Image 1 (cartoon, rainbow, N blue to C red):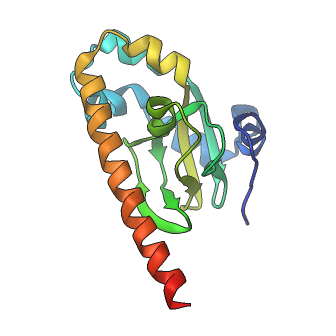
Image 2 (cartoon, rainbow, N blue to C red; image 1 turned 120 degrees about the horizontal axis):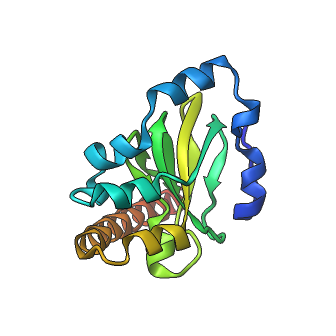
Length: 177
């Protein structure tokens, strides 16, 4: 079942917020420390000062069920998601380009390019626990971190290469049909 919404604001209605968590969710949330995850397991934030990571960790911590669309290709997106539990599937033109897991970040492309989303990001595990960071909050926390900006550029180049490969597969599939 897909929980599909066309804007960032609409998508928030598909999230499961703290007041609606069940026992399983409380157990998962109790095991996930987003601050430590970002400090120790996130390539993008490697070497960033603890106080900056602490400020980042004030984003919304939400759950989403399998099939929930966090980011829709071609739509506006104003958030970055840090995965704490579960897996997210990234597709471009219907072709899977990657899987995002704990400690990884998704949603940078729209922030860096200033465009609509280039891919769709969907929860692929039964349940995902994510930290949602608004672009403005993320950028203000990291404005004095040149190493993060360099790593964001590397990630951007990787995502563009993945999207290009997916487009090539998409075009080949269309020709074969």
